[in-house]
Image 1 (cartoon, rainbow, N blue to C red):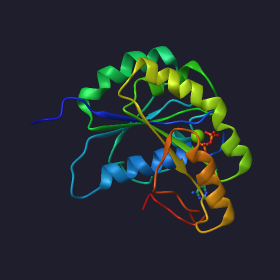
Image 2: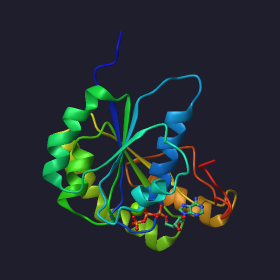
Image 3: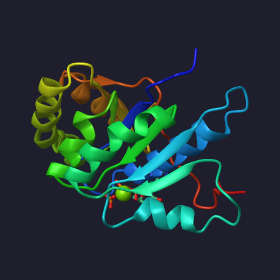
Image 4: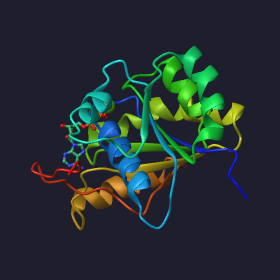
Length: 189
Ligand SMILES: Nc1ncnc2c1ncn2[C@@H]1O[C@H](COP(=O)(O)OP(=O)(O)OP(=O)(O)O)[C@@H](O)[C@H]1O
Ligand SMILES: [Mg+2]
């Protein structure tokens, strides 16, 4: 049976520079190029800085997914429900602040992915974000939330401390983490 409702994954954190756009860009690429599945994939850039848009503007060839920029809460609220039936997966990259845009993007998501860096300052910052996420769950009971640890050096004291601290946050931590990507890594071959 044809899927009628795409899955929306919103990548968000009120903290800046934690890897939201990197994660969103890599996820969209992974979903769109997985050979075993033919998925219709859309990248929504909700950040007026447009980092992920500028990143994929550099692509030398046609991309295997669609892209759009929806940078106000009103436009997100209007457009995401309209876009859902046309896609299997929609990835939304959020801006780094507590705003009505982030709230709108999370409220309409099936899954909110929250990248966090393994540093005490970044981990402490989640306390600002959790109320916003809980508020979104109050409106959208189906919303699932997961932390994703980014740039984790496994088997270090810091890694263990970060995982322990996040375990107290009452939002599950994905068992899969993102390591330190090499600077020379090119995903757009
Ligand atoms: N796993 C990683 N390994 C190496 N570098 C990374 C990794 N994740 C992110 N970076 C780098 O960290 C910087 C910030 O990443 P990114 O722009 O994805 O964060 P962001 O949360 O989207 O930032 P902003 O809050 O400004 O939107 C970038 O230079 C990016 O290349
Ligand atoms: Mg970003």
